[in-house]
Image 1 (cartoon, one colour):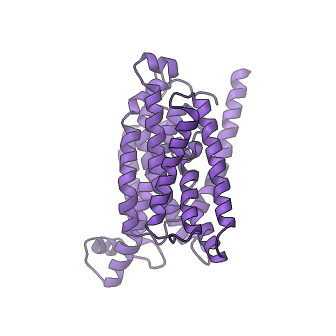
Image 2 (cartoon, rainbow, N blue to C red):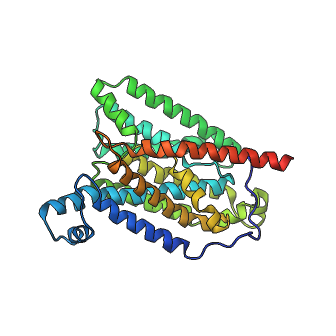
Length: 345
């Protein structure tokens, strides 16, 4: 993997008002998420329902069905965007994504195992705890295999091995499912969705996501130093080994909690940082908050889209993000390729 260019004096200045602007878009999409669905509600109806006023059916629709869904979209989308920005800052590569160290795949494998064994259904409490435990297990396995002071290349290779192992385990669990209905439930859960989530899922996921946010945001200044290279960062007082541990643990905790309640939602962590990176003058330290807000906006927009796209049933949001994310990823690869070709010429 090639390093990004260091971040000396930026050729363009960060856009003022970027964070407030993204926050405003997020709030607008949040309200739209509460209003849009099979039963269309007006802005006033949504506000009345949030305040506990209005028709009883509106209260149920807004507060019990759509509010948990919107809150999870903000929390999970923000976590994925933040994780992507942190991973790209750590590896100094714009193609890095939260799945690189195997945490989402391990979380999915643990959750699928619980479903296949019949210990929980897709909305049970055992599922989130299993997924979070799986994400942490992937981190401990990664550190055990590669070592705490391993090079980034060794960490990446170890992460890819863990991802492949978790993917194989997931396929085996589906193959050994006790009945076709359990296999179908697992398959649909893996597609990624915010449908039928409740406040108990919000209360379970958000505390872990909050802790992960602190772990990833706290060393933000170190990402700027790391852009100059590991040796330069060490000379500036950055403990690179500690930074890796913080980022890997934060990504595992936050992404594991996200996968636990929503299944696999791909490419938000890759796309969100790229959308806002030019607007922060490619500064990895300034990228974290805008990437988190952009991730929240993307997942809110995707979750609204799956409700309005004509279909016999709701399209899974993980399917939509993959359809959009794969072409974007291919575009980034081609861009990186032509950039390297231009440098060699």
